[in-house]
Length: 607
Image (tube, rainbow, N blue to C red; front, side):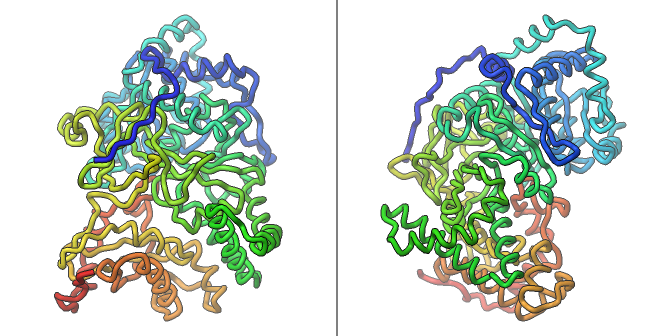
């Protein structure tokens, strides 16, 4: 069993709670911009630390005046926007606890989060959110207050709180200690009923204070970021709180179709994203170049950029490569940089492997992608790469105050300031994921001599073929998904004679790709899936994945589904991870068809 410990850089304060992070920030930089709000003319209007604190206190008073008591739980269903974090801190200042609900949740999911958590109030954003809540309202009599952001209810709340004193808010915000519940965040339910993760104030406080010390180049008062990932998920939630601690200016843009224009005007210095976003930027840039007759130039520029990054890692960039890179940087790479706002130096990526190719490409673009690793149960990050010593393909060393060990079966286990306090009202599930005080992540990985983690698979997702071969799906799926025509890919083959895959086409990229390849851009997915050129492109993507594994692990057959797998279809989580069990059940007939005429011995190998 291999273990790696990193000592905390900040002494723990068991009395501190999350509100202290804002109080300390205002004391340090009272007039610095902490947020920036979009304006009607496409610009941005700054909100200082002091202004934000004033608004937080006013809203907290409104919650108190409405009858919210210390310890009460408030459900929040809202997309990523300024008001999300305003409500988050106002809830803490009122002494209450926020229960995030994904804005895409169904009425039954809303019902579960509300009833399991014991929430007594609900905040929705839009009429659609309210309508979904209203479907189950009669079944949640404990909810005595319901507010809707788009109806101006936050302003009304703030005005109604004028009768509440500053002293009462100060008393309430100091009630919680480090070990007390700060929030209940429900897992995405990929393997069953969502479980409420008990995240404490110390989880946020100690992790923020140590993370900022670990990556000060990224998180500081001169930094800015544009949040677009849902704040209901722990990844963006933690970053939003870390930015307050670090004095980072934050803007919001939940509509990914408006992301590039917003980045161009906001000009962030770092981004928070999942690998799929970086794949989309690369693929759309490539297809745009193809449409303009410059596809070969783009691909050559990408090839040179990747070679340039690899040469940097090797310690020497040959002169010829330097010259080539300078040319392509001016012709191609600089344009992508400008599209990202021109100031982005870092990005923090999580939830899935980025892949070596994209890691090297973006590094030569001038964007250092710091891959990190964590779960809801670890308040997001267990580890993250350091800007001064990052390793492409790895997810960095443990953060200060965190320990990691690799169990005998390869499972990653963690302990320290990031690890949650257990599952809400579910002692059996809590006992199942802890061993001698260590949290069992369920992920498989390895750790090098410097403590850098590499994730190799998900323990529960390992496929065992009929021939006894163990196959980690992610090793195949991630490189295949990088192809512009591919939407999702799901590897199957449990107790089957060989490995197969379900594939979907990327409906957003498909028309462009079809047009670029002399085909009809108006074709439906079903029409495209039957064309030899599309089948050949999918096979090409699968060949890339197969090249990284043994023959016994390689994909022998694939089937293109008629529609993409999405969150709306129930096949993806809000962070865009596939719900493997749901997909296997929903497409059982399709999977059976892949094997209906296959000999039992096919695919068995001694390799």
